[in-house]
Length: 209
Image 1 (tube, rainbow, N blue to C red):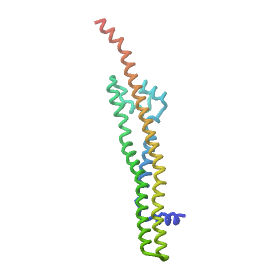
Image 2: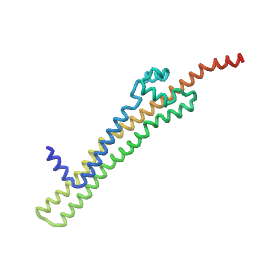
Image 3: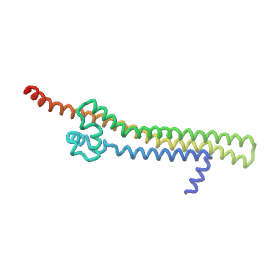
Image 4: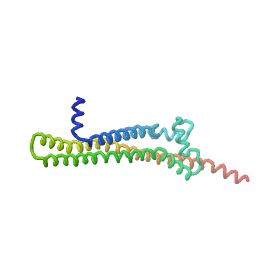
């Protein structure tokens, strides 16, 4: 079984080597990105949990409490909360965006490398045709046709799961942005509530003075 796979792979010519490298890099980057994005904070609890944790940060798990501090749960100004939430969002998306860009490049490179195999295979076929007839020439033509057809097929098959990973990662990023916007809204509401509660006390102090 393994020997047959190796023989089939070798028939694709030298282009199969860079195609294998691109494929290995694509799956490595894609799987690492998926595992990383699955551990993002919006999966740590439900929306009700986050509402509770924003209202009472001390009841939040340690990781969630750390994110709330970074996002500005202790701030008293809405502008500062907005700035801190953007920083907290970028803390997760900056590295993921770089990996997603690399993954998209590798997905696009697979079929292009396969097309390079088509060009080299057709050149080998034309070279065999130029030499005339004979058994060896026929074998050379068959080898050239294999090199022309097999690499692009592998490149396209490789790109399909890569496109699925890119689509999943982009959707996951949109989910994270929606969560970050919701978290910022909860934190802003917390700031306004604290300001509303402290306003009567400040008014009484001014009257007494």
